[in-house]
Length: 496
Figure 1 (tube, rainbow, N blue to C red):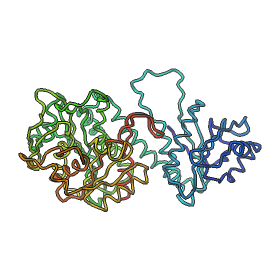
Figure 2: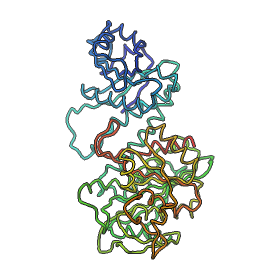
Figure 3: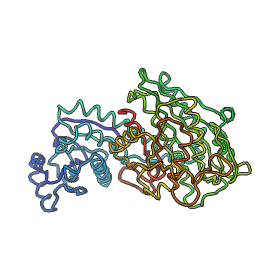
Figure 4: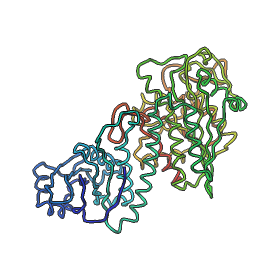
C-alpha cells in the first residue's frame, strides 16, 4: 500500500473510487461535489434515505462527470459519539467496496465536520493505519495468480493548510501499521519456520539495521543454565529445538528512564505432557504473539524517537511432549531462587516469564516492566476474544496503557490482582504452584503467579490470548495474527 496526499480539487482526481466519509445529517458540505455530478448525489441520497448514520453506505456511478469512476459515501454517525476507531472501521469497509469493483486505487475524502473534535493529524493517521491494516494479507505460500489486481494506492484529500500536519500523520500511521503487519507476519508463519532460532535471527537483523542505538544479546541454553533459569529450561527440554533467550536494548541519545518489554515466546505449544486437544492445535503457533509484538516494536522504535531506554526480553522455546519433557508433579527452581511445583505442563508460559522477569530485575533494573502474553483461556472466558485483560501494580502505568489503547482502538480492560486469591497458588511442596486450586479465577491467579517474580518494580501484565489471533476475518484484519499491542506499545512509549 502506498499513501499519498493531494490538495487538488477532489473532482479532478483520477481514481477508481472516491470514498467520502460523512457525519449524521451533514451532507451540505458535499454541495460542490453534487453540483459536479449534476445533482445526482443528493438525489440518490434522498431516494435511498442516506443521512450519514453510522454504517450507512451509498454507491454512485459518475458516468465520467468527475475523475472518479465510482463515488462511495460512508456514514460515521453523530459527532458527539465519534471516535477515530469508527473512521478506521469505515475505511476498512471502503477498502472492501473498492476491492469489489477491482479497483487498484482510491481517494479518501476526510470527514471535515469532525475537525472540531479531533485535529486533522488524528483523522489522517487513522485513515493511514486503516488502509494498511485492512489491505494486509499473508499469502507468501500461495501460488501467485496472473493479473491479480489489488488495492495498491490510497490518496488522502486535504486542504493546502493541512498538508504539513497531514504529512507527519501519514508517516506516524505508516510506522504503526507496518509494525503491526510485521507482528502479523511473525504469528502467521508456520511453526517449522518460526522457531526460537528464527526469532533470534529476526532480533539480530533488527540490531544489524540499527547498530548505533540497538544492540542484542542471545543467551544459549548453556548461558540460561548458568543464570539458573530452571523454569524456562524445564519447558524447553521436551523439544529438540534449542531455546533462545533474546535480550534487545534500545538506547536513545537522552533517556528519561528504563522500560522493559517482555513477550511470551512459545513458538509452538502442544501443552507438553498435559497434551492439548487435537482440535485447533494448529493455531498454537500463535503462542509467540507476545514475542512478535516485542520484536515488531523494536523494528520500528528508532523511527519514532522514543525517549526511553527500552529492553526487549523473549524467552523463546517450544513446549513439546517427549521422554525428556517436564512432567506434572515436577518441581523447578526459577532464576530468583523460588521453587515452582508444576501441576500442568500446559501452563508453561508463566514458567518462561518467571525466569524472564527474574533476568530483567537482576540485569536490566528497569523502572517499569510490561509483559504481553497469550497466557490464559480463562481471560478469554472472562472478556471474550476481542478484549485484553490488564493487571498492574501501578495506577499511573495502568492509566497510561489504557489511554494508549483507547487512542489506537485496541480494547483493554483493567483486572484485579486479588490478594485473597493468592492462597489458590500456594503449594504444599514448593514456594508456589503453576496452576490454581479449583476451576475459577484462572486469569487472575496467572497474574498473581507472575507478580511473585516482579519484586517492587512497577509492572503491567497484558493477557492477549483473545485478540492476538482472529479466528475469522474482521474489518481491519484477515483470519490469523492481528498484531495486537504493537500500536498500543509504540503509542504508549511515545507519550508516557
